[in-house]
Picture: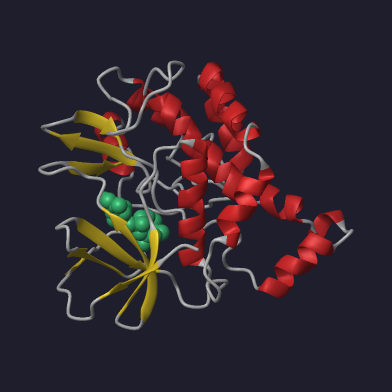
Length: 277
Ligand SMILES: Nc1ncnc2c1ncn2[C@@H]1O[C@H](COP(=O)(O)OP(=O)(O)OP(=O)(O)O)[C@@H](O)[C@H]1O
Ligand SMILES: [Mg+2]
């Protein structure tokens, strides 16, 4: 069973302004800087974050660590910082605005300028290394090869939130320029749905109501063309980015195929009772 970390009420903290959910940074007893993020009550955002973290571990996708947590009566998740000392996380929008002068940095959601083709030159640059502490398999040559796994994850868990502030690079004197691990997967796995609706979808014979149909409707935060009025589906986004680096696309798909479904079942079974919503 995954633990629920109880943070002492009197722990001092600093607010984090980025993102839409309430969140605060604190220092734990090992003096690590840790983010406490509150899933919206009535949703499954906290378990979705934890389940996605464990799926990443099973697939060896570099990821932020998450544990279920509770603090001052609020349920959430905690995530130790993945930014090293004196380092900084530079989000996708800041990077893209440096390369494309007309890039609208401040629009977070539904930015049709967030094109899959624009990410390619950013992440293919040879000076950008793979995430810190990650053991690089031979087939992986650059940060784009790793990023493909983040987009495969989005397709697997129907993550609808891969906007340009939900990926980035780490800049640090010690490690240079590195792709950040994947983070913020709270908007996935149908976490907004009620259990009755989930069960109905699992049991129905109506294809239009099936889980498969539901997943096929999931939208990524990535676009194919600025003229498109909606982002790519999560599965199409994966195929589009995998086309740029077919060997890595195949590598990540093989890793996925090699996982027994029991592994996913165990991940979900390890959630403590009561974390279903
Ligand atoms: N483990 C971590 N280490 C370092 N920085 C982090 C970590 N987790 C989150 N952050 C930073 O905090 C910001 C907000 O976190 P996160 O994206 O998880 O929140 P959110 O409210 O769910 O965002 P959104 O509005 O995209 O749903 C991130 O954009 C990132 O800058
Ligand atoms: Mg975010």
